Image 1 (spheres, helix red, strand yellow):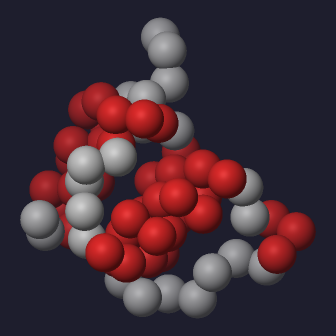
Image 2 (cartoon, one colour):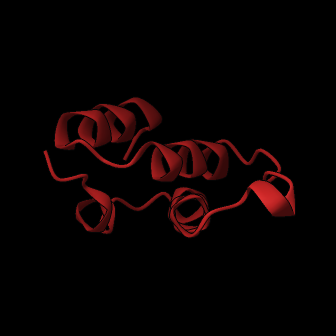
Image 3 (cartoon, one colour):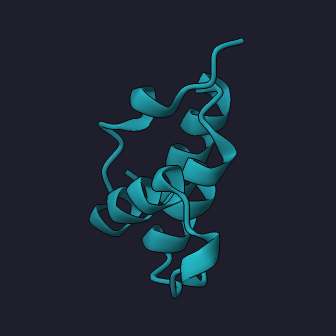
Length: 64
């Protein structure tokens, strides 16, 4: 999984923005947000991004 493939797939699926931001930060090994700004979606995305996995994207799709 490359960075661009992951982001494109999440955008096409309509994944929650907080999850995407966390996934991107984790994938790029950026530091996490300040504690008061972290959401469950962000934290899950960060963990998945660090592992460079896409198996949890579907859990964070926003209903249209």
